[in-house]
Image (tube, rainbow, N blue to C red; front, side, top):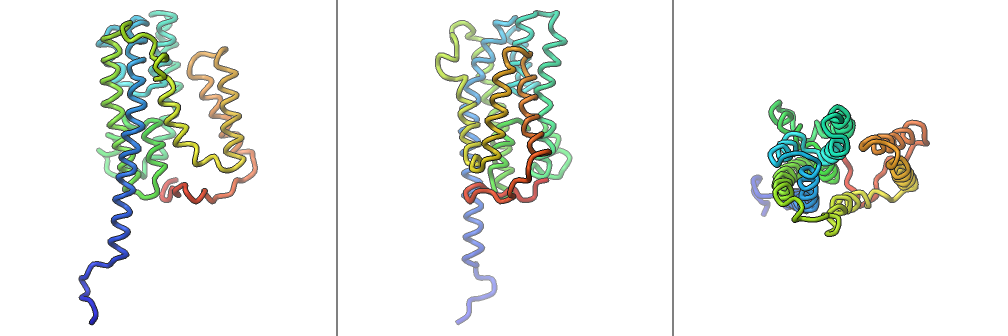
Length: 256
């Protein structure tokens, strides 16, 4: 007896369940990265008030700028030079924020095609949301990863910024708790599966060496940008790398 035409197809049901499972994994990954990244917001809040900002100024900076590297660069320069260093602090923060424009080009086909979705995604296009999204294989899972990560970090980062700003010296040095390494550890976990070929490993090592050597001599933000040029130079002038990804690294189909 043949099944009716409208009977559910096992393969279709399996694909749908697989897609839902991947979306759940993307959401869990995003929440995990958000937890690690948000924890270091305490440090930013404490350092910002120590550099001369009021609690409300510290919170407004996190709410509006919302890119950790730029925020730390801003308060680092401002804290060292005061009001006279404000233009340099803004320039330093802006230089670090340039990378978000590149992320925006990568994430444009992920966040959706409607005007309001793209406008809303601008504020959440950061290192972590981009990394989580690009680690997924399906379009729906990429969107889930992007939005969950971006929104969760925004909420968590601003809450911990407030805590750090209010507690100030009571918190002590966040490095004593290992909070300064939390975000870096989360990024390493995302990056590690792609370090399977010699070229990505060489690029990563070279960029790390360049950033480490230049950090003591240049203002915050510049070493990171110069190190990023290492990857661009290798990609432009180096030999063509094989296009295949490792088996356990999802293909990013549909992205430019």
